[in-house]
Image 1 (cartoon, helix red, strand yellow):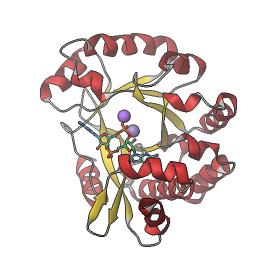
Image 2 (tube, protein in one colour):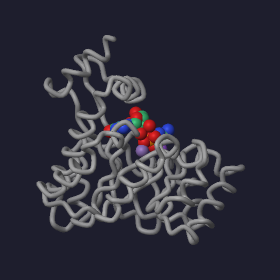
Image 3 (cartoon, protein in one colour):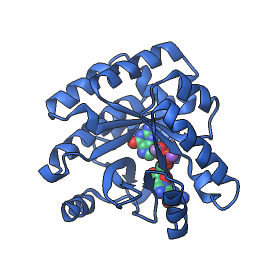
Image 4 (tube, helix red, strand yellow):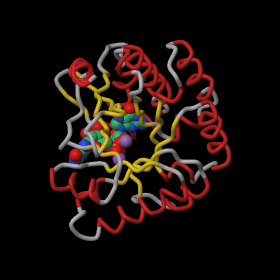
Length: 250
Ligand code: G
Ligand code: G
Ligand code: MN
Ligand code: NA
C-alpha cells in the first residue's frame, strides 16, 4: 500500500528516470540498440523494478507510467546525434500496458510528435504475455509491426509456450534469457544453438542477454549469435554517459 501511494506521485516528483544498456553486434562491438530500464529514486531509496513493477501492474499505474517511459525513449531517440540515427531503443512493456485501449494510438502519436522512425522503437514483451486475450493482443502488436515497430521476446525460454509464440507471431528479436548464457559451458549451449537454428525458419534475430565474461562473449560469437548484451559490454548507463559513449563511437 505504501509503494502504491508513493508510485502515484513518483512521476510528478521527478523520481523516475531511464537508464540505457547497450546491445552490441558480436562481431564488431558496435552498439546497435539500447535497452531502456526504469529506475525509481524514492528519497534515499533506490527501489528496484522487480519490487515496484508488479505493484504498478496490479494497481494500473503502469499504464500512465508506461506512456511516460515510451515518451522518454522517444525524446532520447530524438537527441541522439545524426551519426547515431540507426540506433534503436528497446522498451520493456507489460501486458497491462498492451491491454489499455489507447495503447496503439498513444505509441503512434508519440512517434509522430518526436518524428521518430518506428523502426527505432523496439518493444520487449515476455512470452507469457500471449496467454491471455491472445487474439486481441496479437492484433495490436501486429498492427504496430506493420507500422515498423519491432518486437522482441524477452527472457526467452523461461516462460510458458515459448515455441508457440515464435510460431504464431512475427517476432523480430528473440532475447535468450541470461540463465542459458550463464550455463553456456554446460547445457545452456544446446538451448542457444536450438534458438539459433530456428532463427532461419522464423526470421528473427538472436540477442544473448546477461553476458558477463569475455569467455561467454567469445563462445557466443563462435557459435554465431549476432547480438550480445550484458555487464561484460556495459552496465546500464545514465543518459549523459550513454550519449557520451554513443558520440564517441560514431
Ligand atoms: O533493471 P532491472 O534488472 O532491475 O529490471 C528488473 C526487471 O524489471 C526486468 O525484468 C525488467 O524487464 C523490468 N523492467 C525494467 N524496466 C522496466 C520498464 O521500463 N517497464 C517494464 N514494464 N518493466 C521494466
Ligand atoms: O527481464 P529483463 O531482461 O528486461 O531484465 C533486464 C535486467 O537484467 C536489467 O535490470 C539489467 O540490469 C539486468 N542485467 C543486464 N545485464 C546483466 C548481466 O550481465 N548480468 C546480470 N545478472 N544481470 C544483467
Ligand atoms: Mn528486457
Ligand atoms: Na531478459
